[in-house]
Image 1 (spheres, rainbow, N blue to C red):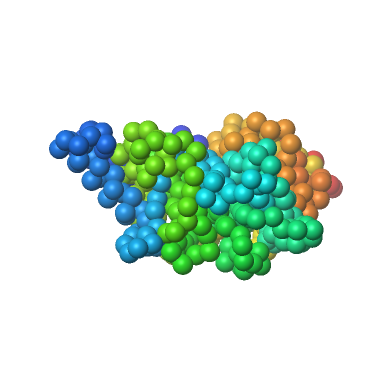
Image 2 (image 1 turned 90 degrees about the vertical axis):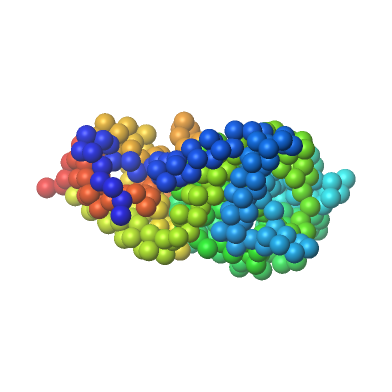
Length: 400
Ligand code: PLP
């Protein structure tokens, strides 16, 4: 069960940006750092010990993801610095010489994709690739019409998808999307927000590559990974002898050990934790919407009718300014977000809100609250009470 929060600490509801390090993970990292101080590329005893721990972590992560660890076409895992780099390696790697034609190919993205994925697609655009923006339907699924209406579909084609949207928590049905796209597409999936909650069954899923980062589920930051389906050829974007030749540089063995432990812990209580966290999220959403209405503010939960992961609540407050809400919430002891952490300086509301058809008056007032396994009922009750006071102050006076 989650530990209770000291009363003078703020309620932290920004776990989609980063989660606290799980003490069990910290212990695994400390043990690995003590044991594996050598460079995994060194052939001596200390180097070999480090290499062994690194490969154990890799194998364990692939195993937890449901990857194929043996046989002629085994799946692989490349450690990266985080999901941003994993997304870039996935997209640019798939677009590399093995799958490449001089005239470039086609890459499809959508507004639910993280900025790192969209930036990688833009980079491909700069190399002559055609970039297609797939619109979203109301439930957050992509509409393939713009790709189908192209006079000719260039090959190769890469479909980017996000298993759980970091801004809304809406799940993608990647299986269905791959089917709708049809033959000839390589799928790169960003599972950064979904990995803590979903059994990804990597070996049988429709993806060629899958990005993830453990700081979203109690693991360390500074490391991420790209799982690569057996038989898929990737080009290195930062070549070197390490990491199967796909990423140069001395590997972070202790971080890899922490990554493996964090994923293992997340997988161990997935179903129970998802239920518990979804119940807390629902309570949080209901509490905020009710408080907003009491304060005379119209409020909606974005994606309420869509399939969602349990940990994200995106609440749109009509007529309010999301930066003002976030600042006032922080002063009142609640850490929440105005969108993804990378976009928190942006003055523009997240583009996905328009793509999902949210009326303009709500878009500027959307705030994201995100939970984790460590979130307690007391946290939620405290947040609801504090935000009720904030909304009462910021919102229009109740009509008499
Ligand atoms: N993809 C998604 C869906 C995310 O939510 C994030 C971070 O918030 C990233 C990618 C980037 O992850 P990292 O910070 O590990 O680079």
